[in-house]
Length: 377
Image 1 (cartoon, rainbow, N blue to C red):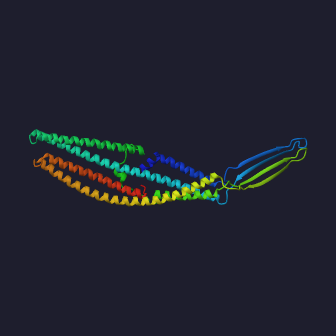
Image 2 (cartoon, rainbow, N blue to C red):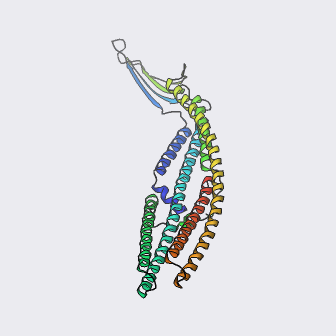
Image 3 (spheres, one colour):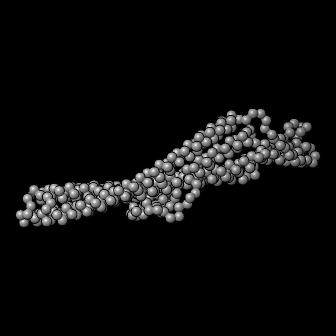
């Protein structure tokens, strides 16, 4: 199952989305680690005198504007970037968990389909042999020709059910190949068998919900810290050429630009969106916790019920198979009619099919318990 999960994940669209989210988080971390709050700007200006009095006078200035972080803004940005990266990793794990649920459900369908095919094949072979025995007895004069027709009809019906079971299993195998890329799936028992090494970590959905809340809080805090344009530190060098043979003069200037006034409407909108996202994340986390608790309780109850039903179906199938064996022995001795034997064989086959399907349902119920607990293979 672990290999199937890795293969299916590499082919899924969610894996590409997860890589994109992780790339965004890493880019935000690089922005937070930068020394400047934005890209620096280069300023250049030149003034030249006109007229006879200012002939040859020229003034050249070159400056650099450096956007600065507001107090505490860089630290908040680093924290928000780390939470964003943790959230991206949790989102990937939650997506893998949902994909694992699809594989477990498909594994349950494969096991049930394999059980149906096995029972249908056994029943077809049994009825074929019975039809041949009845035909020989008809030729010997022990049975009426109508009995041969009835036996052959039952055999043909079993062949039809066998073909239907084969088509159902083929469809599920095609779905498996589309999901995982594997040409041949492992035995269904291996897909639903108890997995070793399952880690009892926090549920992926709950971890994602909690990190979504923390992510929204960090965005609100960062939005409040980013109100208004960032301050700028200016460094410039000026060279003045008075003209008329006078020597040039140079100077260095240092300036600090502090934006005043209200925050831009765009940042107000972003802060409002962050606050709304925080409220939604809180509500989603609470609902997810209640939903998962309910799903876990329901999965445990269904697993216990499936175990009891599987045991009952196994005992019932054993009794009806023994009854069919005794009636077959009696039929060969001429003490039981063919219709009674066919009804017994049909009842035994149905019981065996129900037992196999219930065993598959029990295995799937156990897998669903692991799924609701958030356990990985």
